[in-house]
Length: 223
Image (cartoon, rainbow, N blue to C red; front, side):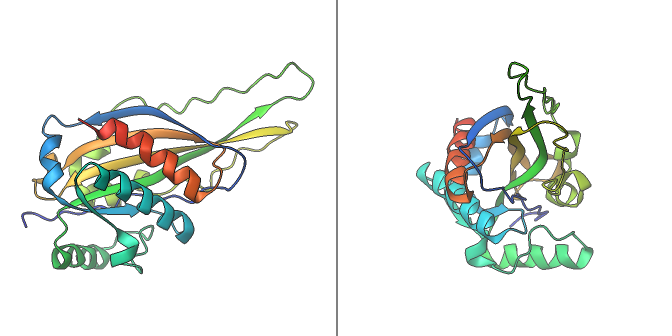
C-alpha cells in the first residue's frame, strides 16, 4: 500500500423526530474517480452516537456494494475506533496501522457540519426564518490528504449547535452533513476523489434517515 495518509469520515448524532427529507446542497468528484472502484473501502461515521454510527455505516456500505465496490462498515472491524476523538500523533499511528493490517486503501467519511432550527411564527401567516449555510464552494481544507482533513477543526461534528426558539413554537430541525471519499493509494494532494454536502430536515430516526441519506449521496458519487 502506498502513502497511507488517513482521515476518517463521519460524525452523526441525529435527533429522532418527525418525518425526514434529504436535499443535496453541493457535490464534486474527481475526473479519475473511476479508479476508486477497485479500492478496499472503510466506511466511517464520525459520531459518538453508536446507534447513528451503525445505521449510517451500514446504509452507506450497502449503497457502495450495490455498485460493485468492496466496502466495510468500520464498526464491524474496529468497534472501539472512537471516530470522533481528536487526532493525536499516537492516535494517527494507531489508525494507520489498523488500516494497513486490514488492507484498507480507501475511506468514505460522513460528519455533521451544522445544526439549525427553522421556525414558523404562529398566527402571522406561516413566515419561515431563512437559513443560509453557505456550503456552495469547494472547501479548501479538503485538499491536504486524509490526516490534514481528519485533524482540521472543521471536520469535527457540530451537532451540538443550538439556535434558541425564542417566541416561535413550530420548529423544523435542519442538519447539514458532509461525506468525503479518499483514495489512500494516492499522494496527499490527490487523495480526495469525491465530496457531497447535504441537508436533512427533521430526521425520523437513525435507520430511516441513514437509508435516505445513503441513497441521495450515492446518486452524486455515481459516474
